[in-house]
Length: 302
Image (cartoon, rainbow, N blue to C red; front, side, top):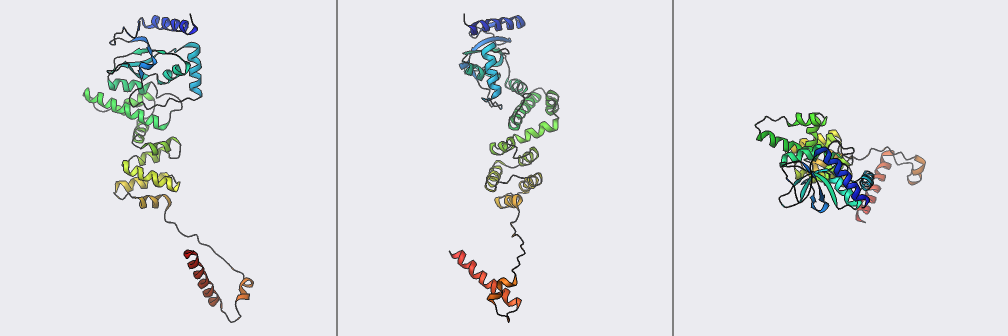
C-alpha cells in the first residue's frame, strides 16, 4: 500500500473517532455533518470569494505538509444544485492538494444557507496573517450583508457591526471603515493594498460615484500624485457639492502652477561692452527685455 494511502486511512480513522461518521462521496446525508473524501474536480470556489490563493512561501510549506501528512484539517463545503460542492473553507488546502499531486481532499459537508455559508467563509479566513485591505474590505462587506439578511429575516434590529466586532476583536468603527473601502473600484482599492493610498483617504474616496472614481484614478495616474488626507477630504467635498470634474480634481491635487520667483543679477562688466555710457539702467533693461521677447517669439515659431 502506498504511503499516501496509509496516511489517508490513518487520517480518516482519526477523524472518524472524533465525529463518528465517515462515508464516501456517493453515499451521504447532507442533513448531518460528516467527513468525506471528495475529488478535487468536484470542489468549486465560493462565489465572490474575497481571499487570494497565492503560490508563495506559505503555500510551499502547506504543500510540503500535505505531501508528508495529508490534509489534517478537513475543509468545509456544501452541496451545489449544479453538482459537486462549494468550498466554504479550504481554498488554500485544495490548491495545496493540487500542487502535491493528490486527487481528493477530506471535507466536512454542511447544510448551510447562503448567509450562513458566507459568515462561516469569512470567519474561517479573517484571522489569517497578511490579509490585504482589499480582502478584508470585501470579506467584511459580504459578512455584513449576510448578517443584515439574517437580522431582517429574524425580525431583529440591526446590530451587525457590534456582533462582527465581538467576533473579530476589531472595533465596530474600524469594520465600518473597511466596509466603506469595499465601495472603491479595483484600481483605487489596489492603491490601498500598495500603500499608495492610506485607509483614511480610501474611505473619503469611497463616497465618489464609480464614474468619478475612474476619472480620479486617470488623473492620479497622469500626474503620478496620490492625495493626502486633506486632499481626499476636498475631493469628497467636490463630489458632494456636485462640483467634481477633471479640472477641479487637478487643482486639488497639484494646485495652480505658479512660476518660480527668481532673482537674477547680471554683473555690469558682463554687459558694459554692449552699451555706451549714455545708456541709463532703465534703458539697458528695456533693450534686454525687447531682445528676450524676440528670442521667445523665434523659439515658439521653431
